[in-house]
Length: 107
Image (tube, rainbow, N blue to C red; front, side, top):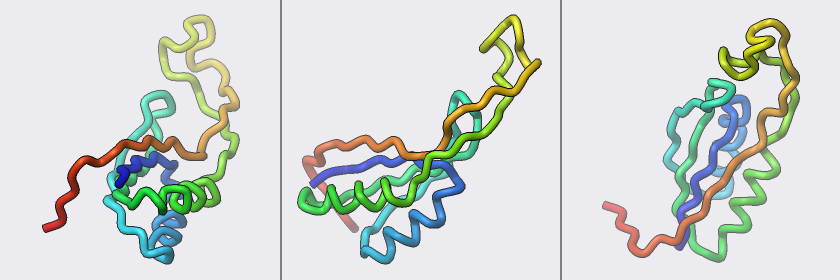
C-alpha cells in the first residue's frame, strides 16, 4: 500500500476531486498555500493499493494542467527590481510524493 501526497493548484482541485470520486478513489483534501507564489493549493492524501498507483497518477496528470501567469516577485527575490515588473512564471501541474505504508487503519 502507498500514500500519495499530491499538491495541485486550486484551479484544478474541483476537477481532480470529481475525477477521483468517479474512479472510486478516496482522499483527504487539505487547503494549503505555496511558498514562492503564495497562492492557494490543495493537497490530497491518498492511501491506495500498489496496483492502483499508476491509475491515480494518470488521473492527476490528466487533470492538473500547467499554465503561465504573470506575478510580481515577492520582496527580496530581486533586490534591483522588487515589485517593479511582473514576470511570467509557469504554474499548475502537480507535485506528487509517494511513500510506503507499513500499516493502515480505518476506524
